[in-house]
Amino acid sequence: MKLSAADWRRRLGSPWWRGAAAVLAGALPMLSFPAPSLWWFAYVALVPWILLVRSAPTARRAAYDGWLGGLGFMLAVHHWLLPSLHVFTVVIAALLGALWAPWGWLTRRFLAGVPSAGQVVAALFVLPSAWLMVELVRSWEGLGGPWGLLGSSQWDVEPALRLASVGGVWLLSFLLVAVNVAVAVLVAVRQSRVPAIAGLVATAAATSAAWVWSPRPDVDGRVRIAVVQPGVIDGVGGAEKRFTREETLTRQLAGQDVDLVVWGESSVGFDLADRPDLANRLAALSRQVDADILVNVDARRSDRPGIYKSSVLVGPEGPTGDRYDKMRLVPFGEYVPARSLLGWATSVGKAAGEDRMRGTEQVVMNVGDGLRIGPMVCFESAFPDMSRHLARDGADLLLAQSATSSFQQSWAPEQHASLAALRAAETGRPMVHATLTGVSAVYGPSGERVGSWLGTDASASAVYDVPLAHGVTPYARFGEWPVYAALLILAALGATEGARSLRVRRAGPSQHVPPARTAHESPACPGR
Image (cartoon, rainbow, N blue to C red; front, side, top):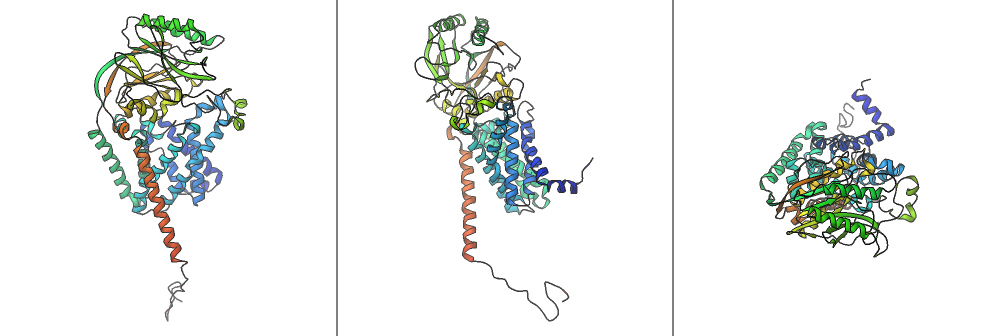
């Protein structure tokens, strides 16, 4: 049955229909991310949500539509958590979705009805700024980290990666929201099309300027990096079986002149100090392939209390002493926030039964022949500031050791692998994303793909010729400047609104003046 415009308006008058439409509209941007990876859709994905919110009958309803859309967005980008956290995934999505309520209120504030040219221009700056504040707040590790930032949907688009080198993923998110606002105005408000078109032209001009003027990384060398991906190994004795499989795959690299071998997250399930036999086997492998091996130990440490996830470098003589302990842990997956209050999550899903311990600082390791590597673990690759700090500390190559074996049948492995492209482009440093079960991927210093991905069905080792580059990108130098610009824009809005409110208050209530009458008629009632 085909519904007319009047039918749609009538249905959206129902709180239930409108709420369902808001959730669905908020979920649409997920199609821009891997695995669908419809990158172009990100430029219009917010338009249905914006159009719905601007039509809200009240400001309170607009904020509510913003919240429900945020719920839909968070549930869509984290859908792969449902098998692990079950209903708690919806609870988390609902809590984080509330961050979009102010964005919804502002959308109606500037775009409701027939907005003036000034309102449209303001919306092109205010709404992207408000969106960036949502992304900034939810990027805090305790709220789940920066997974699913809108700008990260552009990981495979060369002009966007060039922009990322200027302002990071934050600049991409800002520009994407601005484009969506302009398109929504073009669709819905014919009278305001001139400023909307001007906004689109300005965005295109900014992109073109970045393409022409932003510095390009100077490639000045190459290294051969091997990634070992053992694949899914379950059952009794899984840690021992995995180690043996990784050992077999690593031996196949002998004679291939590699500079470094990288294993995935939790590739070693025992503390090497407690298992000298494993340390000796790793040292023998290092001698056989003539390269250091970066493993990841997920075990209770013998020298201090607690379980750590640690990147450990092993050379021909055994562990070199270079070690990085994971600093940013996955909420519920590696620790339960406020366990005394939320510990019940372990009974309804696969939340961590015992909290992992945190490292205290990032580490740059010397591999040999002047190569310096900056390791990260798992979802730390989603944090732009971590890779930026490693690059500024002198890392020539960024590394992320990951494991997504719990989410093999979802979009999570592809989306996780794509994040390394953005980190490479932002910093001008190549990045290796090595996993236990796929997807493993390597990117050059401009974010370009190097070689082929190792998919979730692969149990193999692969060697990549990785270009090295030096120099400092604008993002590495200046950091999250788009976020600071967004804060200034919102501060200016707050000051302007405050000044306007003060003027109205000082003017006092307007007095009612009865309409003037003539001898023949009243302006209010012609003919009387």
